[in-house]
Structure formats: C-alpha cells, structure tokens
Length: 598
Image (cartoon, rainbow, N blue to C red; front, side):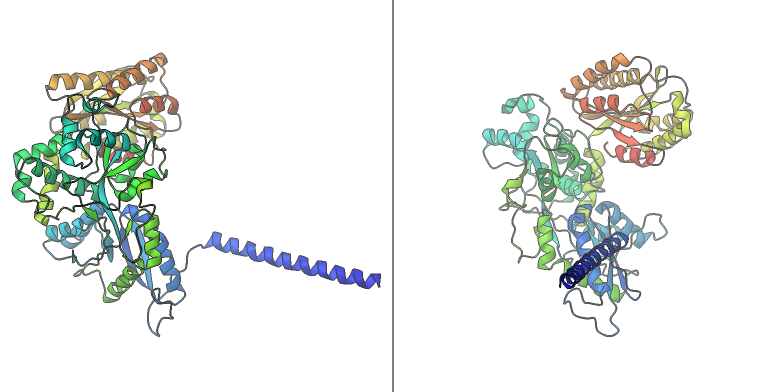
C-alpha cells in the first residue's frame, strides 16, 4: 500500500515538474521571440504607405503604426478587424519623424527640382500645422495638398510658456487678461522684473525656434507680426495679416523689439524643452505647443523644473496646430492603392482608442468623442477654456514674406569660435575634423552676424577679430584651414580673451545693451595645463555677465575622451548652458546644430 502511495505521489511530482518545465520553456520561448522580433513581419504583397510626421507625434504615432501593421500582418482590415477580401492587399505603414519645415522644403524640391539632394516624397505628410501645406502649394505653384481638406489628428494651441511666478507678477500689475501688449510693458520697463516685485536679474529672457524649420517658430513669428501690427494700430485679431503690414517699418521694429529679448534661438523645440526646464534663471518664457509645456510639467525632461510653467494664451489670439494628415492630391509618387491605404490609416488614427493615446501624450483629441481630460488640465499648467481667440491664417504669400522677414527682424549675434590647437589635437586627426566642422559652422551663419576666431595652445591668440561674416568670411576660411596643433593648453586664457573681446565689441558698437546675442563656442579636447588656478576667475567673469543686460553664452564642446568635463561643466553652469559631447563621428553635425542658436 505504501509503495503504491509512493508511486502515485512520485507520479504527481513528476507531472507537476513537467508542467512547470513546460511553462518555463514556453515563457523562455516567448521571451526569445519578443527579443528576436518584437514587431510584425510585413506581408510580401503589402501596399507600402510612407508617413513623415512631426517629432512631437512620436509620443503616440509609433504605437499606432505598430498596432495597425500587426492587424495587416494577420490578414485583417485594421479598421473593421474583419478578414481582408480575396485579392485585397494589406496596407503597411512605414513612418519616421522629421522637422516640418525641413520636410516641407524636401517636398517642394521633389516637385520643382527632383534631382536635388534633399527631396521628400511621403504618401502622408503630417506637419504640426497646415501652414506648411499652404507654403508648399505657394512655393511650387501647384496644389500639391488640399490645405483645408487634410483632417486634423491632434490639436495643440501655441502658447507662451511662462513661469508661474512671472505671470502672477504681471497679473498683479496689469490684471488677469494678459497679452502681447502687457508683455511689451515688461520688456520696456527700465528695471525689468525688479519693477514687478521680483528680485534678481533685470533682463527679460525669451526664446523661440527657427521659423524655417520649426512649426512653433513659424507660428510664433507670425504671432509677433500680428501683435506688433495691433500695438502699432495697423491690424486686428479678426482680419488677416497683410503684405503691407509685414512690410511696414513700424511693425517690423515692433517685432525686432520682441526679438531683442532672445537669449538664443534653436532649430527645434526639442532643445528648448530641455533648456527652459532649468528654471527662470535660464529663460523667463518661451513659445511652445501646449503639449510640450505639459511634458515639462510632468517632469519628463532631463531637468526637474523648480516651479510650474503655465500657459499664457495671448488675449490678442494665437494659432492652433492641428497635426493634419495630408495626402498629395496630385503627385507622381502616389498610387491609387497608396492613397486608399493612407486614408485607411488616417481613419485608424482618428479612432477613439488611438485618440485616447493622443490625449495621454498631452494633445487635445481631434475626435470629439474623446473628451479632454488630464494631462490636458490645470494641474499641468494649461486652461482648456483657452484660447479665446484664434488668429486668422494669412494668405501663403504673406506667410512666405514673414519667413523672409526673419533676417530683418531677428536678433543678430557676436560669436567667437574658440578652438583648442594644443598638441593633443593631432591625435586621430582631431584637428582636421574640427576644422571641417568649423567650416560648416560658418556656412550656417547669417551674413549680419559678427564672427571671429581665437585659438589657444600654450598661449591664446586672436586669429580673426570679430566682424561681420560678410567681411570676415574669406579670412576666417583661410585662417581655419591653416590652423595646426602644437604646444600646451591655455584654455582659461583663451576664455578670458574671448570674454574681453565680446565685451569690448559691445561697448564700441554704441548699440543698445541687449541688441545682440553674445556667445563663445568653445572646442577643447583636453585639460588646462598653463594656469589651472584661473578657473574661478573665468567662472566669475561669466557669472557677472549672466546677470547683466548682455549675458555671454559659453557653449563648451568636449571633443574626445580626454576633455576636462568637470571644468567645462563648471563653465557651462555659470553660463546656464550645458556641455556638448563631441567626437570624430559627430563633431560636424554638432557644430551645425549649435550654429542654429544664432
């Protein structure tokens, strides 16, 4: 009896172990399959539909693409969940992000200059705003897109993201209804924020992105022209901005007054989200999409904001970014099958389950069946009853003229390239790569910017004094080409020389004290070897300038593994910037990005 019980018990144990083993093997196999191929495999007969979307859509669109493609891979219609009919090809979405202005120019090139090196031929183009669709039609002279017919997929008003303490100080003086008129009064106040009861820095710091690349930058510049025309009594928030207003000298000067508050520019909002999160010491306010402000307040940036950012919806009005899905109406690269597939994916993105993800990413859903809720709520600094006024979209010819006017109204810059030419720069031909990058930096600068060159090895030498790029270009190019690496590293003497030259330039120019961005782009691969005790002097000089009407931006690029990150980080912190990490592979692209700060 006992033996029989033991046999039964042993059988149960063996069976249990077998079940456990099967479960473990199944789980292991699942993990292996997930690790090897987490995404569905494209069917061989699929119709490919390419989508280029604005970078901020990444928060929800990649999941939508994956879920759509999974259903297609199973032979199902992604909209109905039913099996595809015999002979019906599945639709396969291939998506990637791209800055709206850059992609728009690529589409323009594809239509009028198809052999250009920068061409884009998407089946669906989803910029942040349909302003780009009108510009594409205007620049090509063709109706490439149905501007109003492209359906919105996610809504985000353009707001002025301002620190709550700043906005409360303005409201205490001017009441609760705040717009550009009240901001103008802050700008023009003799003691800046001190006249509003806030201690510390007097100067007002502002920032926005490049209107040739960024949707927010384009809408912001357009809003500045509207605001200036209102302040100067030539426009209204209910009638379209006209060419006469854009060309009006008084209106342009009003925009120039706003732009003079710029601390620095940036090509894309991505960089600004990280920078402004450092707090009021870095920027007082910046133009953002509402969803970007929510993102910052949710603590998703590198820096944790020291206080809450709040959305200011200017009383004069703002623009709504609709993230339209635009399919070319007349383009050789779009087949009927692709057009049908693109329309199917558009409907899929507008489904309630996908639109719920849109909401979770901080956008206002385009599908009205999905109610607005948190995180689009006061907890994260936004007001869903706003904006009260949406500005009318001007004609494309006016949009194009606003873009072109940027070089007339934007804040110009004094920029010194401070290049390490010590002996270690010979290693791995770092000096050669640095010279190539410096040449690219020059190509991306406006001719009205003043550019100079200082090198440092055992000593610091001004190679090319600051002057307009138009005047200095050939001398800068030949001087950069002739740089050679030798000697030790007088990094701090180089910085002191650069700071002194910038401050001398400002005092000699006779211009207003905040009329130009002043910056040093420092490229170094090593440690100070001549006078390491001068670090405190350098930090103090930068800190003093930071609190003046004319701060000096120092953007250190740590080039190579031997760069003194600790010292460069102290210098960056004093300037409210951050160390950029460069190497032989990315140095050209890095300096190209930095060039767009000016």
